[in-house]
Length: 352
Image (cartoon, rainbow, N blue to C red; front, top):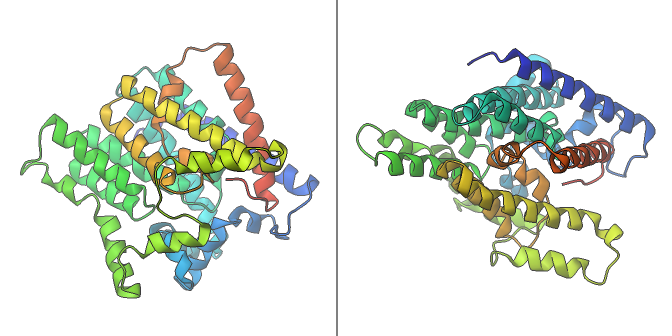
């Protein structure tokens, strides 16, 4: 892996500023009833608590099967060094995110200039949900595994590409989108043959988890049922847009601000993904479309900003924009939202 010291420096500066915002928000704003007394514990709010719980005790509740196992497994392993599960989870996220940025820079540079690659990373770091790359959530690890799989596939190191795609599939359900996109890339460029058949094993991480679920519950797809705990059931695609609009109609928008943001980010994400089919390699666009399709098959757009965070091609599309008033205004608005989201999250409020 290339060092890219400038990328590392920018990430460190961004990380320091973000944690200053975290500390400021924790010290000066009221906590919700879900907030915790210790600052560190608040870095594992909401889903983070489930990841920590699984790392400590395994799947103690059936609804936790919605959380794929690789991230908790790594937390458990690293905690033997750190002595603290939350510290381990945050450390994994931060290190994974730094590695992801370096790899993503190299991946983008295969097709575009260094300036465009840097600009794309800026849009990623300025994204309102980017703080999830530094807390006890799986986004940082998943992004690292995803961009690694795509980079190795582009370099035709198919064994490594398959390995990282399989690990992505053991981290989140949308890891399947990585596998399918890589298989499509190989099929379109050279066809599946005895030299590249290994990519067909890229869904192995997902398959292994399904086998585990079958042994534990009798249902290899129990994670789908577990999602019901959060009102995420498979439904007609697009219904989530209608339900969100229905929620907002005739109501005070300020009382449903999260729903407004979810709707706006869903529209923005879809627009950028459709645009990616014109400018980016086809496998990037397919990965993006499949990634956003998963939440669109549920009756709610909840968490849409966070779901978009690992969809790296949308940030390349943004990076391809010319520097101008729109680009500047977008970054300022994103930074304001990022700061607000970080302060809300660290105080136990639901963000995304």
